[in-house]
Image (cartoon, rainbow, N blue to C red):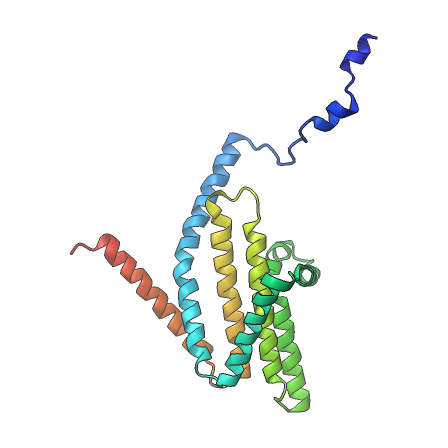
Length: 231
């Protein structure tokens, strides 16, 4: 009979809080993680001028191509945003793209973890498909449709990539998010620039890089002047 005192009823068992799944780290390990997150936070802040400058430089280069193609690209961007906000979140499509990259880089463990966030797999596939199509057919009639899909696919990758990084637990000061997404954004814009420089003769990757670096330098110079230069 005494053993029954130690037995829990099913109701008591169900009312107990579930055990935490997060590993309990030693205080030194937690401190090390906090310091590392602070460093990533500061690096992320340093990347923000490049996020801005790469956007400005990309928009400047988009202005030199045919307005009809630029319109198709922005229609693709807007179409995805509208579908994502008001119709359906195509997370299944994004996850399938991540699995493709995991399969491609499965022999190199570090890239398996990084590549799905960094590389816009659908945009890259579309660029390869169009390049093959144009080489075989010798026609550029389908380019406007591919440009639309470029805008759609790059928006898909950036939005879901940001959502995945933002949802990570234990992100002190959002250091992982600010640094990670800033780096992903810059790399994605650069990949798009390389693709457009191949598709459009007027679109220059060199001008993009020069414009981006000059704009970022201007921001850093202005900040340094405001903080450290005495008037």
